[in-house]
Length: 88
Image (cartoon, rainbow, N blue to C red; front, top):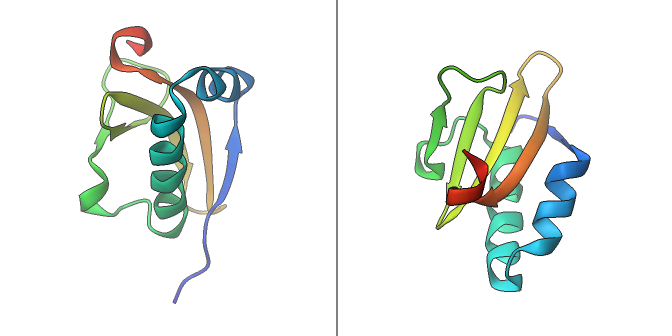
């Protein structure tokens, strides 16, 4: 089994995570736990973002997580977490 990726957060991601509904917070944190184990897992609904400076989008119900992955350093940086209508 390969080592897990480390996870870091932008201050905006932390602020927005605290502001969403507690049930959605739990779902997001659960999905992030899966993401650090396998950032290429097809069941996570990850899409590469086009025309943005940050790389990927994780869909968790109505919530979106914007993040980058550095596979060589085994790091994931979360840039933003918010509801779909607020994040794009």
